[in-house]
Length: 479
Image (cartoon, rainbow, N blue to C red; front, side):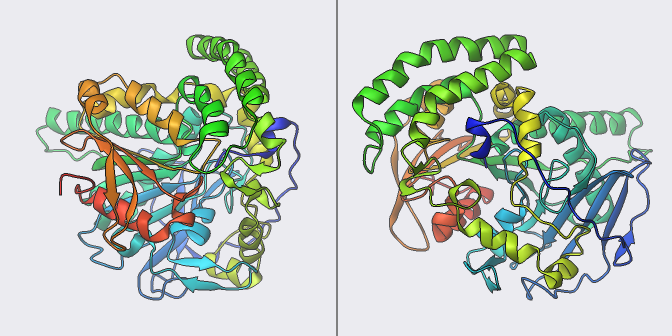
């Protein structure tokens, strides 16, 4: 999730995490030949004991050095874990924990609004998929250590290394179809991660072919089938143009005056020049300048109204990122019994770490063009789902759809000529959104009705229908 705290001010401080000093609860996996300095520690008890008593679960840490420790929590599918797809979930921020996705949006159990207990989530995405939640970069959520990572490109390299160690240790999941999903700033992470996976897969296959498969490469080929990005920040140059329209002409009620929206339109050309220079130079100074000046022109006027930039229907009443429920998640994940059950090595949990966010922002990462690899992914056969709640402002559906139409790939014209048609949820039988896609479903855009920035939070049943149909290759009008 894009951090609201640093839209206005990029100066932030973060309390140091308090660390548990024991790893006794973990088993250490054998070292990986390609990553001899990395270790994978995971929970000994693989029987279900917490959150979802119906499935096998594993949690632990990837240690890429003595000072960098990435936390993960994996849940098998409630359906057929030997055949159901494998889904990696990443929250955004940067610096926001994927435990928010687990305990507040789409995971097997959900924290109540008082932060005291959890309840079984019948709409969890592990109903039909094996799902892995990963806290990254370092200092996000339960991950901890010393790291100065300040760009998405470097961050996803460590995610790939984690996946290699995970699938090597738990190789029963390696043959499964693999999908990457996430929301918000994960729009910066997911395209380069998918590109890295496809590139490394080619290297592994070339190695195998070179030796006629008499030698087995150490690395695992990840069977990447698709990526799914919810309300993603992917192409600021295209998306920032839509803010005035979302502020004054959204589906619910105008938030700003027509005069304020005209000022935003007048400010966009200069903003676009700054973003274009960032795209061309990829220089931190230029990109940070674009972030500061464009956010001041396009986001601050909206924020000054007191409305939530994550949902135009609601006031920003408090809580991390205007979600009061996120306070409850923080309180729950700091409880001693939860720390023991999760095997967390820290006792102070934050849903979003402002210090991590600050590093990325001042490095200009916010505006950098990580979306540039999407055309090649599509043409290489990787399916792309772009879904968006229709009430989100900060990553609104208007600019997101404009970007989808601008993607320069072999079926761009077909996608742009396609009709927007109603999308009917199978579970409720109601029209739950609007969908556009190519005939082969390679690129799909879905606008989810009555949802803000966090679609699974606002529309749990409909989002489950969406992701299940997507991973099965049957989402949309091709049924």
